[in-house]
Amino acid sequence: MQVITAEYPDSAEVTIDMRPVLHPKFQALADGISEFTFANIYLFRRTHNYRISRLDNELFVITGRDKENPFFILPFGLPDENIVAELFHNHHVMKAASAQQAEILSKMGYTACEDRDNFDYLYSREDLVNLTGRKFHKKKNLLNLFVRNNEYQAKPLLEEYRDDALQILERWNQQHDGSNDFFAAKEALEKMWPLQLCGGIFYIDEQPAAYCLGEELALGESFVIHFEKAVLADNSRGVYQYINQAFASILPEKYKTVNREQDLGNPGLRQAKMSYNPVDFVRKYKVTPG
Image 1 (tube, one colour):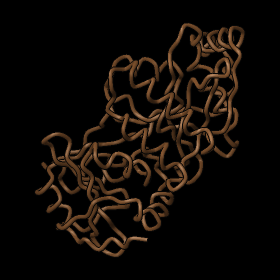
Image 2 (cartoon, rainbow, N blue to C red; image 1 turned 120 degrees about the horizontal axis):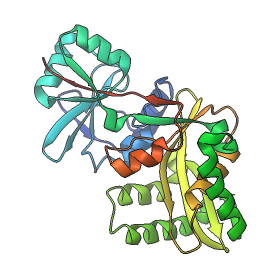
Image 3 (tube, rainbow, N blue to C red; image 1 turned 90 degrees about the vertical axis):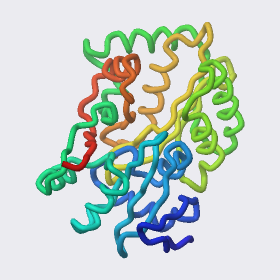
Image 4 (cartoon, one colour; image 1 turned 135 degrees about the vertical axis):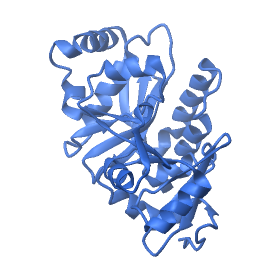
């Protein structure tokens, strides 16, 4: 276990040895913000240039930089006003603020705006399993089409199937001409066990065709899908509907919702996510000075 000794404004790289310290803190958060898991922070540490600092015995700040734009996030709570002011002075923008944090910071004179592109989509696990009613009619038809036309099999994504999942990821990446999350997705598969990620893998005609990988959050009431990849082929129409339904059906009933993360402002992705009739969103805010 690595003790985080870097005190702000000093900072340290996020390493997997920090998990025993940080994972329990993330697991104790009730808001269900998809970024706020140790696995997410660790896997996307290079994408967002994450670094971590200790503010006091209980609070940590995670700083980052997207291109040339610095930012900070405070998953575990707000420090005192002087430290908050210093953070805004040094990093300009606070991302992934909860509704409660946004309200407090607004009263302190900061400007909090809804960050719609980063809202997490929440779906009823029961809805995804049953697909009942007119609002899911098209999804049910595509699922039935897939089931009729394919020999398929679903398995838990255990380490013995990791090479098959890596094969799916490589083929998916080729079909998409590279992706911003390829290296994070690859590392997630390679480190499933130490990160305690779990998911499912799906075969069509005995060939690896799709997988999903995630973990629980929101005090164990929700399950977040961090990665979902499928290889598209002539026989794969309806495969995403099948993945969604098959994986939701094996999730324990304690998970009331499935968090399928954000759309990042992509119009096609937003349309696809909305078509599954989310029951709610995990709202996040972007906060700036004045």
